Each structure stands twice: as structure tokens, then as C-alpha cells.
Image 1 (cartoon, rainbow, N blue to C red):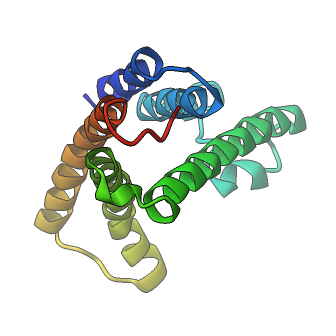
Image 2 (image 1 turned 30 degrees about the horizontal axis):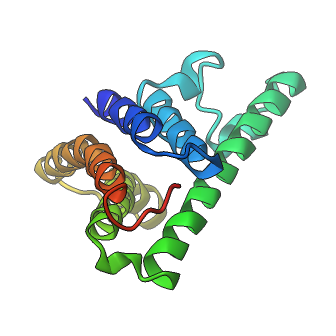
Length: 171
């Protein structure tokens, strides 16, 4: 359902934000990229995720494939950084955290980060620190993380929707 959530968020940006400028297009594109990531498109054409360092260290992989995937990965990083700057500027420099849309934007953004941390925590603890979580703890982490993945695009879409009636951050 998170794929649908990200597509709903992208559609909300494109249908609700007026005038439709660079910020709105970049947020919609980022939401579509997150939907593609959830649909495993980052592994579809190469068999392995091109978003991981190991992809580029593989000597057997053709250079052209690394070059194209590297360009796409850099564009995605640029989109994430641009969105982060827009969000941080609105929330903290312009005081947007005090508005309704800003509070929802802050909650949705925080849930994206928390969900990613919960997703990676068992692997990082195991590989980097040798700490093995029990099977029940892993199941709880996965189920909680999957629930967050489904909720945060809808929270961000709601923030975009109500931003047009209050403090705007995408137009």
C-alpha cells in the first residue's frame, strides 16, 4: 500500500498546488521515485540495487551500466537534498512548524526518517556490532516499519492538501 500512498502524494502535489512551479514538480517527482523504490525498480533492470555502494564496486558489472545508474542515483540524491532544504527552510527559518500544514509536514518527514532507521536497525546492529535481535523483535520491527511506510506518504499528502489554505511551502 505504500506504493499507492506515494502515488497519491504525487497526484496531490500535481493537482492541488497552484501555481505549479519547480518546488511542486520536484516534490511530485520525488514521491514518484519513492513509489518506484517501494516497487523495487532500483533492482529491476540490474538485478541488484543501484542505490548501494556494492553495485559500483562490482568489477564484473559493465562501466556503462554503472555510469547510467550513478547518474540516476545522483539525480535522486539531488532531489532528496533539494526537498530537505525546502522543508527545513519552511519549517525552521520561516516558522512553518507553527502552521497546520507545517506540523503535518514535520510529522510526515520525521516518520520517513524513523521508518528508515527501524528498517535498517536489525542489519546494522548485526553486521556492525554483532548484536543479534530475537526473531520476535525482528517481526515487531518489520511490522511497525511497514505500517509507517504506508502512513507517511498519506500524512505528507495531507500536509500538501491543507498547505493551500494556510502557509504554502510548494508554491
